[in-house]
Amino acid sequence: MNIDTNQQGLHVIFKDYEAAVVKLLVSQKERSLSLSDLGRQDPYSSRELWEYCNKLGQDGEIRPSVSRASVINFANRMVEDGIFAYTETTGKGGHRRLYHSIYNGPQLETMIKSLVGNATERAFQGTWWK
Image 1: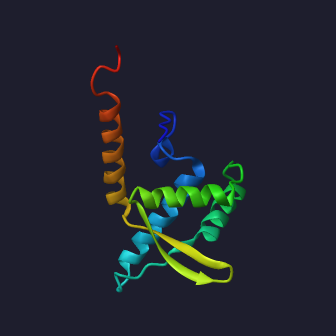
Image 2: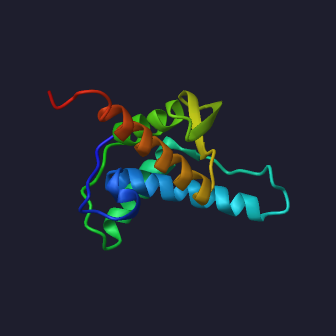
């Protein structure tokens, strides 16, 4: 995790494309919670996430294009960290993952604050300055 104190919001700890993916999946989670079928979720494939990141770059925000591998690696890292989940499906070309957020906005904010707090606690334990 890299912290950039010159940024705001999710951009403090996420790269632009990573923040875009998080916002997309969390907003999808918020929409699914507001529907009558609370269990409904429309997960996104890595291709859809990648296309979304690249379209954002063309809509006025200055962002270099990001590789699909970077998006896949980020989504998989978020799965490992317990922030995203996925369902696996089969189709043309074999198996693919469909990603969704486990948390809504307020829950994710609490989770990130906890992760950052724990990381700083570990960094400053003991006698690091000696």
